[in-house]
Image (cartoon, rainbow, N blue to C red):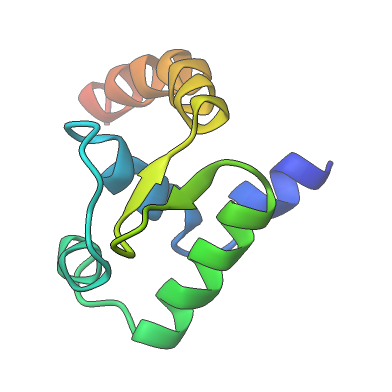
Length: 91
């Protein structure tokens, strides 16, 4: 239930999705742009929550990336991505 609570928060999945692309650390402002310019306070809160959950980490230069646990989460979301593509095609 704790994982569903974390992942169900607004913007959380989008932040994870953007961090997964390329695997290279992403700076705060770039991540904010990739997330359709979400407010900086919401992004900061989501990144803090993801860091506390062990899913994301900041680098020495304050960029963000997924941790190995975060990479595992993205892999676990693969079947959901497959399902959503099938669902979208059938609509």
